Image 1 (cartoon, rainbow, N blue to C red):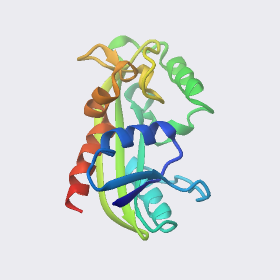
Image 2 (image 1 turned 60 degrees about the vertical axis):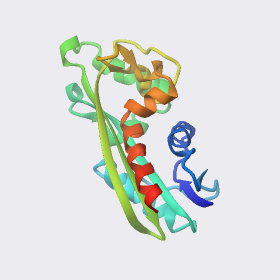
Image 3 (image 1 turned 180 degrees about the horizontal axis):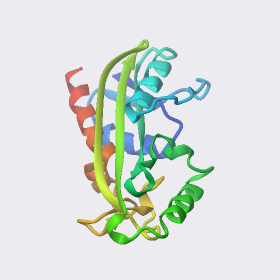
Image 4 (image 1 turned 90 degrees about the vertical axis):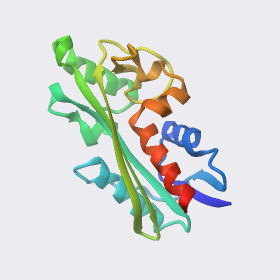
Length: 192
């Protein structure tokens, strides 16, 4: 059995990655060891941050290492929160409150947003593979749904008239930027 280390301490990401990739034959997915020191994300793009994390963690473990960086870019806010999505406020509830507060006066036709996801695979400090995916939506006026994590309750998919937090894990894995990127990861791992 081949081991894939997931370079994140975000429990929501681990659940989504395991759900999307966990059934891949011959692979065992595990979060990075808790004693591995984190790295400061200093990249200007999601891909740069994913690569930084993958390279860092892969130097500290023997296995293939997967890193993710993802976030929300809102056009009316000059693409904020962007690469600072996880650091936009001190916790998920505060991040959503800040976002909705900043969007309060933005009219319905101007609430466009894009959720980005970048994945990077590395071994021994060397990047082996990367992918980026995105999904377009709008920022809802208020949170809806209890599934998912992060900005999912306010990221509305207009064609479904549902937020990401109102989708099942299976539907989210099919429609989300991370889900699409993980589908590409599965294709790569099957060839490994």
